[in-house]
Each structure stands twice: as structure tokens, then as C-alpha cells.
Length: 192
Image (cartoon, rainbow, N blue to C red; front, side, top):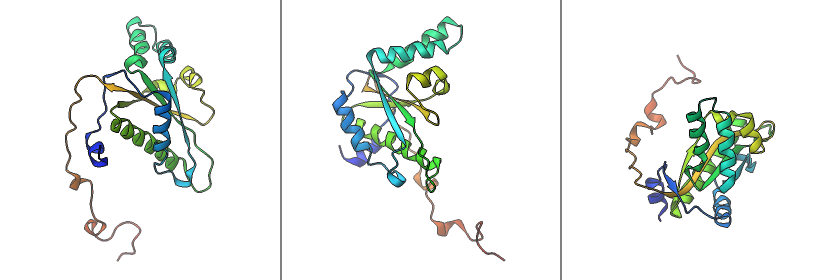
């Protein structure tokens, strides 16, 4: 697949089924995704794969945090079973005098975005899911999060099951302007 075509056709796929990439294929894709922009090459992130019974363990933890309503607990327990592979995204910021946390968050996000494009290019599909469970103490423990680490959610990975609607196109001209078109007297300029 051509790069531009891959970027233009990638969509988040809410319905996923087997197959998903095996461990070796996933490792190769993560290695390629590591080429994403990362100021200082700090690699301020890590990924945790969950398959089979590991997804069920996560489901039990999500159910435990869902309150007393039996239906809510059942829905929470089923969430990790929506895909054959989940990849937990963990921000692991590194103390650095010149590279702030927000840049490290951007690097982690760039890796996940690149990984989702690479998965799409290989014929797989994915969707990045988040939510309040990322802050749950039991979920954090299950993923082995240390002090200062942040769970950014899970990339659900598999093969698209059913049609994924095309993304509506926006006018890129609304989001790209030239500095010369912004006028004069911007903040920070000497003025009259």
C-alpha cells in the first residue's frame, strides 16, 4: 500500500475479530513505529500486549471498578474481549532539563499513531480506547505501572469485522494558514 493511501484509508475500527498480528509480527511493527518523532530519543513510553486470558483478567478488573450494577459489571468485563489483541499504551516520562513532559506525551502518541498506520498497511485494523479505567488503581497495578507512569488507554487490534464508514473529509484550508496571512501586530512583536 502506498503511504498516502494508507494514511487516507486508515480508520478506527470498532468491531474487530481474529486474526491479529502474532508476537513476532507485532514486535517488528513496534520496531518500525519507533521511527516516529521523539525529541532526544528518550523513548518515554512502553507498550504492554494482552491476549487470551490476559484480556479476561483485565475484564475482571474493569468489572470490579464498575460498581454494584450487574449489567454495568458485565459490560465492563466484556470490553477487553472486543479484539483478539490489546496493546496498553503507557507514558513513561523521563526527567530531562530540556524536554518537557508534553513533548514526551507527543512522542508516545506519535508511536501509537505510526503503529496504527503500520497495522493498517499490513491488513489489520485498530481503535484506540480510553476512559476512566485508565486511572483505576487495580488496572494500573495489573499493567505494572510505576510512579509517574500514565496509562493512555489501549490500542485494540485485530481484523475489521464489518464495514468501517468512510471518514468525512474536512477542508484542509481551514486548518493550514501561512504566517504572512495572519496579519501584523501579533503578540510578542514590537508595535506602535
